[in-house]
Image (cartoon, rainbow, N blue to C red; front, side):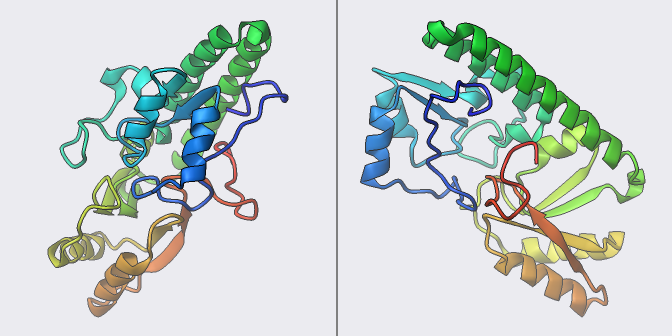
Length: 249
C-alpha cells in the first residue's frame, strides 16, 4: 500500500514480520489504531479470522478494503479445508495480487480524490513491477525439469503459487496453521517424499519447525537424508535482514 499512496500518508502495519495471521490476536491499542484509521486494508477471505468482527464493525463508518474479496471469485481456489469457501493465500498468484492492487488503487483514488492522479499513476507503475516479477519467476522455474517441480511445505499456503507456476505442492498442515496434524499425515507425506526421492523440504517464517523436523526424521529412518532447502514467506513478510521485507523481494 505504501507503493501506491503519497509519502505524506502514514501506513501502519498491524502484523509484523513472522507473525501468523491465522492465529493472531490483537491488543486493545491496535484496535484503537484501526478505529482511528482513515482506511483499513486487509487480506480478507477469513485470513485474519480473529479480527474479522472488529473490522466489519469499523467498516460501518470507515472505508475498509478486503483485497481478497475485490478480486474475481472465479480466480480464487475453492476449498473445504478452512473456515471459508476459498483459500485466502491468493497473493501467491502474482497476477491475481496485481489485480487486487489495481482495484484497491481505484478505491483509494476515489476516497482521496485530491490525490487521484498520483494514486492512479503509482498504482499503474507498481502493477507493472509485479507483472515483471511474475515473468522473472516463471523464467526461473522453467529451468527446473517438470518431474522435479514439487514443493513440500509446513502448511498448505502455496496452492495459488503452484497453480500459477506449474508446481505440485504438498503441505504438511491444512490451509490454516490452526488445523490439526495427525501421525498418519506425517507418515503419508514421508512416504511420498521417499517415493519421489525429493532432496529438500522448506520451513516457513511464521510456522513452528517442529512438524517439519518430524518429517525429516521420518525420511531419515527410511534412508533418505532430507535437507532443509531454506525459508518460505508464506503468511507474511520477513524482517529487514531477511532479504524478503517487501512483496517483490
